[in-house]
Length: 113
Length: 116
Image (cartoon, rainbow over all chains, first blue to last red; front, side):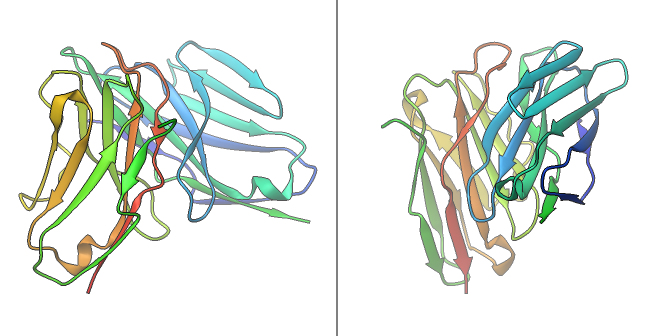
């Protein structure tokens, strides 16, 4: 089985930096994804990590440590439009093939002026 | 089409009736997922299709729920004898998949199901 934990809600200030953590326990590991979901909309892909280290993409970066079962999403120069839920998701591996993409419950990020 | 298409976008049904939700994945995507999202909640995994392999049905909440994928493309999620707790947004996603499913999933806009 897979267990994914992330904080329920975080608050940050416009222009600042925020780090959203995700810990996971899976039967095998084939990659970790971060998605953004605005209220009433479908999730959209942000980043993918399969090897340890930091992946940077503009204002967003994602970090992975496989040995610790840990990832974080770093958002810089926060903008009001970054107010959304951020979903951590993992693909496991159970020998017969890749498991389905399993999501955490999401972190609701509130950006204040 | 360019993206994942789901229909209907909204469905209101009476308790006890059966409903069918449709998903058209992105052409060429071998992996297809169904999730359920209740208001303010996370994504609950329902079922996963990968190519011609047997689907992973481990997330289906009861035997009232079933899904099929015909010809490796379109998928239908069927809920029989709907209950009020089935009310949620049902999201479909597809990805290139492959043996290890390492590519990102693209989501449809979902079907909002309301059982009255």
